[in-house]
Image (cartoon, rainbow, N blue to C red; front, side):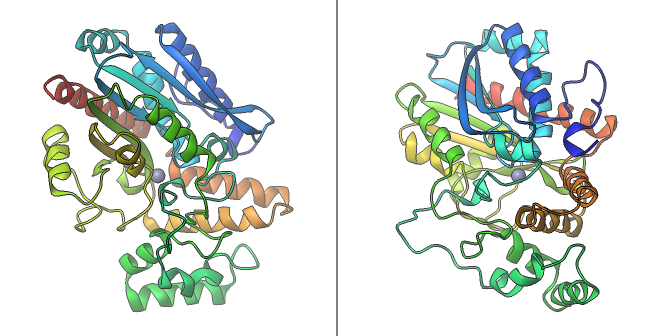
Length: 369
Ligand SMILES: [Zn+2]
């Protein structure tokens, strides 16, 4: 047994223990709800040889100028959370009836990054962090000297890391502080293709598919809301509402009008996320320039930052050591899953409750937009 074949939480749970199970549950729930389905097949196959796809289900009137996008697995393995919320919504007959009456088109995008979801990794098939990948690759890319300094320590030759390696990382945190360590590691980097939070050297398959999907609706959508489900930052079970937009005061004010004053920003230090560039949602304004866009990342806490970073270090190490002993591979996969998904009913219940509440609020806001 490994992290991709854990037992299901409960027989009728919306959550899953593998990508294939999550996809089956999503497609069945969407069909049961009479949703229109559109599947974008990935050129590669999954961890168990299964097909991979970005599946899009549309609830409601696809010609509506008001649309809400609900997406999972931008960061692969984080899809266990977002997929669970999507299936919970589709299984909620009363809610779906209410949403249908609102006249708003709801697009559920299942597994933006299906490869990472299936392989239990945060990155895409090319080791790219999809939320650092929206860059102009013909222009100079952002520099990250802090990452350059840490690169060899973060993905060492051996795993588990040596005592000297641990001491050197601890020394960096001691000297610069945990926030500086988090910013250096997670801020995104474009020089170390086998490292963590690598933004790539070209748009990935997932970014290209999302752009096509957005472009196909640019003439229809006047108002678009987007909730992108993430995990791995903040207190366990708490969903932080992070404004998913450009550094723009009007967009932040609108996001807070939709989802409350508690909405945080990565640009002013109020979010538990470090400042970032290359975010996937920046594609909306590029592909749908005439659409008023309001979005947030709903970021659920799991484990403390150092534990999450250590899991990603292990995952990156495994990425370049695919011949590691099977027991070590299994333990790293389990460590990564723990870092992005808490295996308790209390956590899952908190995820769904906060997710559905945020969707309710978005529907209310769109109705008067
Ligand atoms: Zn994420």
